[in-house]
Each structure stands twice: as C-alpha cells, then as structure tokens.
Amino acid sequence: MPDNSKKMTISPSPERKHFVVALAYDGLCTFEFGVAVEIFGLPRPEMGERWYRFAVVAVEEGDLHATGGIRVVAQGGLELLAQADTIVVPGWRGANAPVPATLCQALRAASLRGARVISICSGVFVLAAAGLLNGRKATTHWRYVSTLRQAYPAIDVVEDALYCDEGNVMSSAGSAAGIDLCLHVVRKDFDREVANNVAQRLVVQPHRAGSQTQNVAEPVARARESESLGQLFDFIRQQLTQSHTVETLARRVGMSPRTFLRRFAESTGTTPAKWILQARLQRAQTLLAQSRLTIDVIAAEVGFSTSALMRHHFQRQFALTPAAYRKKFSGAVK
Image 1 (spheres, helix red, strand yellow):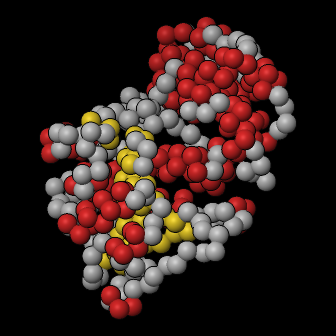
Image 2 (cartoon, helix red, strand yellow; image 1 turned 90 degrees about the vertical axis):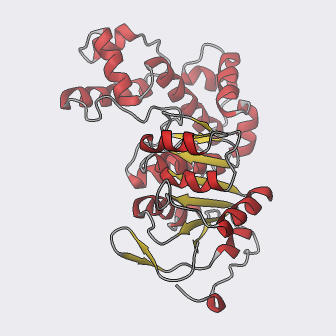
Image 3 (cartoon, one colour; image 1 turned 60 degrees about the vertical axis):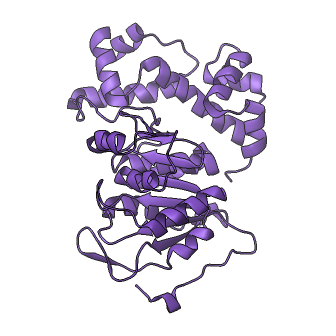
C-alpha cells in the first residue's frame, strides 16, 4: 500500500456519480470483498455514465493481506470516507477483533453527513463498534448472532434474516447474503430491471427478500423436485393472471399439498401466496417503467383484481404509489 504522501484523492466528476468505497484491512475476507467489487466496482458499459464510481479504502497502514494470501493495494485511506456516498464493510477479522477508533470515528462522521453504510457478514461488528446500530435492527451470520446480541444489547438483532435495511445503515447475514443485500441496494438506486441485469451476469437469483430465512432445512432439493419447482416458477410467471391455489400448484408438480408447501418453503423461504404476490409486483414494476399502459391495465396484466388492490400492495412493498414509481423510474432502463 502506498504511504500517506502518495495516497490518492478522488475528486467528484462534473456530473457526480454515486461514490462507493469498500474497506480493506489486514486479514480481509476475500469473498465478501469480492461481492462489493463485483457489484459496485465492475464496469457496466450498458449503464453508460450512470453507474457507480468505486474505490478501495485502507483501514490501516502497511501491507494488507486477504484470505488466501492475496496482497491488497488500496487507492486511499480513511480520508476517502469523507467523500463516499456508500461505504461497504466486507466482513471483519473476527467477532471479537477490536475495531480501530479512527475507523469508528470516520464511519460515524460519514453516517452523520448522510452516507449509507453497509456490512456483509461479520462486518456488522464494525458498524456495532461505531455505534451505528444502536436502537436499530441488524443481522449477521447465524454463527455470530448470539455474540452480537451479548456484546451489543442496544441492537435489535434479527436472528434469521438475509439482510436488514434500516435506511442509511444496512447489514447482511452470511457471505452469500451480501450479494442479496448489494442487489437490493442496486434495486433502490436504479430499479428492479437494472438489478436483474446485474444478477443475470452473476448467474444468481435476482431477488431474495431480506426477511427470507438463513437456515434452509434442505439446502439441496431432490433433483426431480428441484426441476419441477423451477418449471413451476416459470409457469406462474407466465400465468400471473390466473388464480393459483396450493392444491392446483401441488397437482402440477405431482405432490400432495402438504409436501408441496414444505418443499416450496425449503426452496424459496416463503409461501406460494407471498411468492406470487412478489412476482406480480415485480412484473408491475417492469411495466410501469417500460410501458405506457395505464395503471388499470397493468393491474389486470399482472393478476390483480383491481388497480386499488395493486396500489395497496405496491405502496406497502415499495413505499411508493405505482404512479410515483413510474414518474421516478420511467425510462431508467434504455
């Protein structure tokens, strides 16, 4: 890592892009760091000039080594946190590893001026040490939940969730849940279609709700059932206007209703009704952003019995009316 005199200062571009920085520290968690780089730091020509700016920030001076023997050279030190719009804490050295006071101070200052701070997995302990999670919900890998709860009783620790969104402070569970949280951030900053495009390049599921369980009873489904459920998901998306029941869906995949509900929950972490509602809302988002169809027509196209019902669920899910969503995101994806 360069010494202080050679540290880079990144100046805002004329049309300022959202500036994301990821922390690097000795003992860096390679996977979690890679998630931040892949989603926020990888160039995306299809987004034109609208994509994020990205930099790596060294938490400390001296050589920084990541898990696996990789040496990390950062673009600057903690002074870059004063310019950042989003700060990603990709794991930490350990649940009981001390967090430098200088880092805590810099994170508090950034948060106070409105920067968004995100933790992946054990990175939550950095946010906790900085006092950013007091009185807020937070999650982490299930192995660290009890440690976090005991060490920081002022935090409302959510035991079994993929991620928690508390506005400008967010936290995710185990390593892979960091992908879900970062895609959630892209969805908020741009829209669902952009996040889906990023997910497609990553070859991951486009959207898993933050409330989805970390602990899946049977992570690897039986081959035949996995294929059947995958085909069922495609069928439902193509037939959103139909009325689907547990019984009709179970028959379609050749299961009893009881077995179907259990396998569906193991695969998705939710119920068929909630999954279908999410699929309808996601399709409504796309049509609102990319078509000129009226809201009444869109409601019918995605399977809501009335536009009022779509408005109710849409506002509850996204804190925006369909009309406000269209105004904000129409034309965002070219």
